[in-house]
Length: 100
Image (cartoon, rainbow, N blue to C red; front, side, top):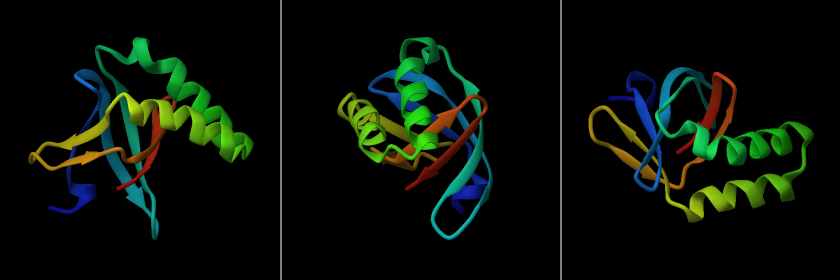
């Protein structure tokens, strides 16, 4: 199955952050609708800060916030069992974009 044909679950460690439902892609990025999971509230500040830095074009701040998430074990797992550890992932409200 192609990345766009899968539903992806987002985890930080064992915490379920939410679900990515891909909607499209370009040459590098996949775009998805994001639905919050049970543990979203615990990690929302990290994702919010990373998204704000990304939108502001502050690569250093984005890498800092994203680096903290990857250090905690950021993983996306597809409905067919495929897992990607430490994907490049930004979540902004109900929108997400990622590279695997």
